[in-house]
Image 1: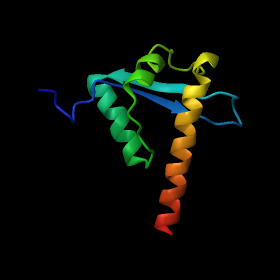
Image 2: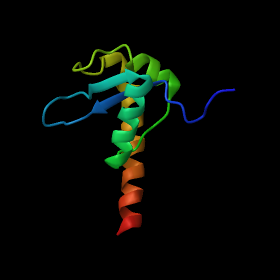
Image 3: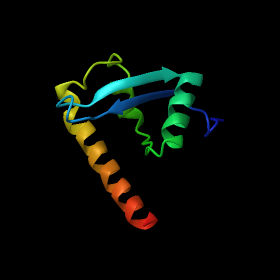
Length: 94
């Protein structure tokens, strides 16, 4: 039986349009490192999305590199969803 709370892998992205045109991989890891990435994101109020297929693709991108152009569409959809969720949360907390 799979442990639902177990984190196997995680990838963290940063999108700062003042620095770059594309999101950048800023952290990735497995096991305890992945759990720490998730914990740090949640503690900072960052939405954590679970998408195993996208995770496998993003895990191939070296830390510090921008997201490759062939993954722009998938990442753009994730970012649009996150912005929407953050907007709803902001409206609910005011």
